[in-house]
Image (tube, rainbow, N blue to C red):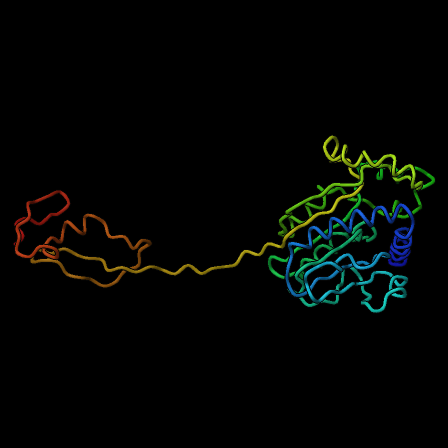
Length: 286
């Protein structure tokens, strides 16, 4: 029952994107995704979650692109695609270079499991783009009003960017960028949204933490294990008749000490007497 409810809300959100307010959101998100994808390269890019407007990675330089559908209505409107669950992706481990999850965490009962599954399919130093709604915003307050409580996208569960960062840190992701946008109230009237366009620039500087949505770019970190090789050198032993080379021993440095050099003067100057010094215990060398 929980899975069917999730599919219903995802399907309603996909249909909501076709409306006037959804088109405004899609345009802002597409511009930011295009900017981030311009600096990302690889062999495979996957978008997890279908969008009514099409694939968000259409402008990517990566050749092989795939869209993973999470609801059946999106698959009917597409030419081809893959249908699966967000927490059980049909990709091999360490196979995807870039993954995009647009508003997937809001409509899944296990958001952390989704991020963990995405971490599995990403290669080392692979990139992840997350798009989500901010609960601490005017868009987040709309969720508590009765007329919109059961309407998409407010029927989903919003997660703040700080919480998503904590999840990514536990999965060894490095957050490279967080772009806050959409500071206007979610009015359905197009003329009203145009009049409030100045709030986008004003909110970027005055109240960036109260944006309606955010887009996050993270990189999967993998620390390689490099074996430490032991370094060897010959340990010299001084005897009364001269110097001899003993068996090789392990040390943590290749640098010979000055005491070794001063104790073996005949290696540098043959048949020359050297005065006694504290560094050399043998006197009268010839």
